[in-house]
Length: 128
Image (cartoon, rainbow, N blue to C red):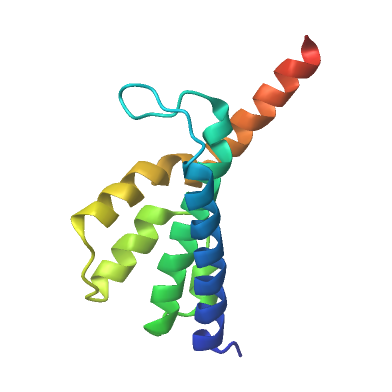
């Protein structure tokens, strides 16, 4: 049997480390005039942010009695939208900014789009 509070604490501490690392990277991001990243060097930033969001959502669910076994199910793994909806179902108030952030990160995080894109970029360099 897993202690939910202990695991939630580990998830939260790891998420905070990811978030702090992302904040450090954010100061070096090159942005286009519309605020979107100008270079693929933004990939580590988004990787850290999306994983921090996932761990914070899972931590919040665990603290509210959600089962660890359920978090391991396919429907919840790397699915930020489902994790957020489950948290809201439990009555947790979530700010519109947080919902917007989760919605923006969800697709690339669930499909590992950033990792796959980086692999493509690396392979393209090797082919030259």
